[in-house]
Image (cartoon, rainbow, N blue to C red; front, side, top):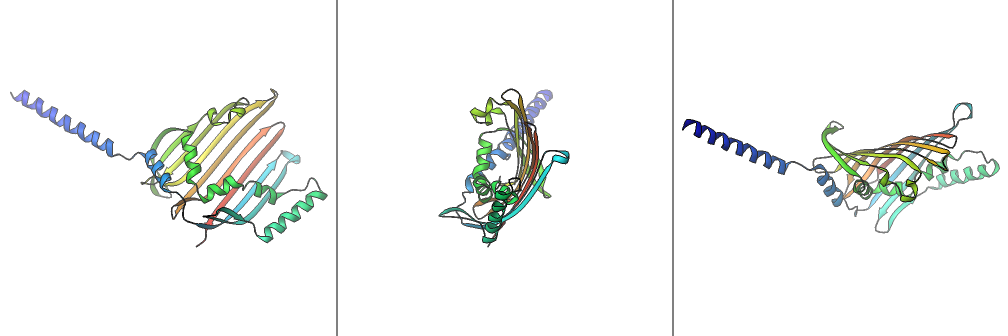
Length: 260
């Protein structure tokens, strides 16, 4: 009788523990779901006025034949009911005109301002003014591989990792790629709001059989919420390309400052 009572009590305790475990699992935060929910909330309907500072550094070749160029620009950026509008100041336009005139006389003349502006195109400016859409696209076409507890700037966060393979490339580009891997890491707050992110891309392949190429690219971001929009306060990128007898190393830095 005592044994039977002990067995029933053990079963009851086991059932209670199992129920508690299920309950904890049901209420445990789902980082991916929280991230998707946060991105859906950040619709970017409130207007934005900001400045964007960009710096670009590039080196082509090695040894005595290496060429190194760097340039810095600053532009104003507005986003509102009429759409996204970059504003290029008169001083910047004058510098750009002078650079282009110099290039007419000297075909080898560097174009640091033009190169920096080329790297600050529509896709980059749109992502800085409203990061939620591009981040949503990135996670939609990647495979979620897991989450873990972590910290960002000393504050508790969750680290979500996504990976993509060769299917991420456009179909016409896949025939040239031998290996491709993209790893996106996103740190989110308790409510799923993105705090920071990194992305690494490694690509190798060949064209016309004899021309081999490699690309290695690392990018890091920090985010902030302004009204109902997610903005990129910082975007740093560095990497290298190699192929067709030419090596290039590059580094870009972009900063967004919100204007009141």
